[in-house]
Length: 291
Image 1 (cartoon, helix red, strand yellow):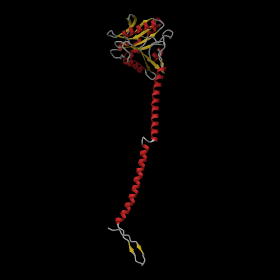
Image 2 (tube, rainbow, N blue to C red):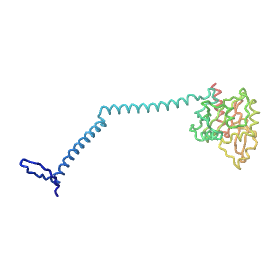
Image 3 (cartoon, rainbow, N blue to C red):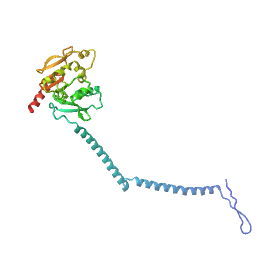
Image 4 (cartoon, one colour):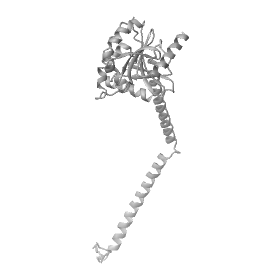
């Protein structure tokens, strides 16, 4: 098939010449023009690729500086996080101090922040620590409740648990008391109170007897059920524990459920364990000798 273009020239002599161009010749011109543009496009893209390759190359001075700065920033950020974590931990431990006039020697101390805890949550947290303590066998761990990084005293503790113990004045009964766990054949909870003398606390703590079990049963992991509800109204009776005067609450099987023992003229232990009582007596005696 031919594509004819009629171009008329008037040569000398007035004779017209007719030039005939084929379709193939037209296509060749088009392809030639297209190839030239395509080659230019390929070259341009190759130049861009080489430039990008150079820009992203680790050997590029600009990229080496960028990587070095990034590494330094990352190292600084990690160092800052470690410092802040250490500083916060240090601040939390420094501000909470064990009372300087410690009642007895303890092998380790545990601090429980109770600023946002309910009564039941406070009791459960103490019970959990008693059962999960890692204090060595035969050792004692002190459990301190803290609020606003301050150790909670006896009177505040009674308020927190809505207790019924009417504590005599601080001149008679110290606000410095101790809760903890003795790790003997079992992990046993105790409360240690300090008083000016046996007579200064006797009436107050005896009057607490009818509510003592109700206030404290959760710390010993006791659940109120049809089998234990009678303990809420059962009377304490006189007893001798570790050769010391005591008032004891027994269950229907004759097992000690709760008791308080006048271990010396200035100390009262509340617990359910004779082993815990004996260990505390030894440590009280040791602290008196060291003084």
